[in-house]
Image (tube, rainbow, N blue to C red; front, side, top):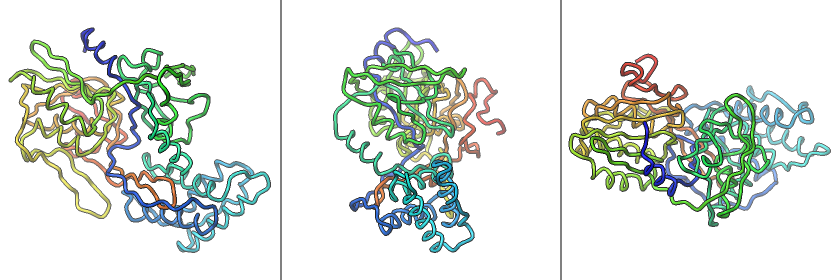
Length: 425
């Protein structure tokens, strides 16, 4: 779709922050009063146990603690290399308490190795981090040192470069917003992020990347990106202070365009205000290109604005619980003649949920156009741990009204695929 020059100028004034796509949907973060960080075995054991307790009790897919310790140890040894190879051990056949004790003992042995600079706690946190990356595509552990920086940066004023960064299994990918400083500097959608100011991003968290990319207005940040054909390039981007509305609009004679940047708490108010200009019987285009998702409740309510009560929006599947079918439960607010949904490889999670729901809806009569979407269809909880660090835990799977999940496969554009959004539906 070709937008008018006014649209681009308007977006350039507003494009803004780095949007975190660390997960599909985050429930409210669970917080605890954090004890002072310690490096003694008892404190480290408590932290490790806290993480494994959450995984075994609440994760969508779980495994015995002894297996968790084995995978965590193997991941740490692989990270450390030959200096720790002799400490690798299979703990999976041990009872949980014995495996935990042996895991801590091995970490202590690694910490005491001549030349080893990491403390017992640092080794434990790196082991937890490597385990979470093995557990599933979205579960993550944010180390306490990174979390401190994230919280510190959150208290200071700053500006950003105007792009979303999304994480896939093989790295982080950039999706600059139209008219943003990142786009103006030459960052292209889908380029892989290699380093920030010369520091590799591998093994880091999205929260950490957001903190280091932000900075004082007018300062520069060096982003090294890898092109789709493999060549890497370092691009310097000047940070700007830019406000970031959740939606932008463009009204035409016979259609109305609503661009959704993210599913934030402000989106519903902004969208309702914008859609009040929608002409009865007109065509609505909702542009989800580059939208990384956001709040689950916001996405559900947004979809429901175009659907009749009782129409299914999504099914949430959790371990050990009956499937929860979530349907529209309020009178339909907006009644366009049809809804065209624009998507691309940066369209993820909440945006994918809305697309699948509106295409399945008989009243919304949605149809999608563009390229295959990103493919994130899981729910997550963010948990601040008593022992320090933060656990981002996958807790459920999302099933579209068509009866399938879009996780890891994405959604096909229906207009180019005879109404289908799944390879087999």
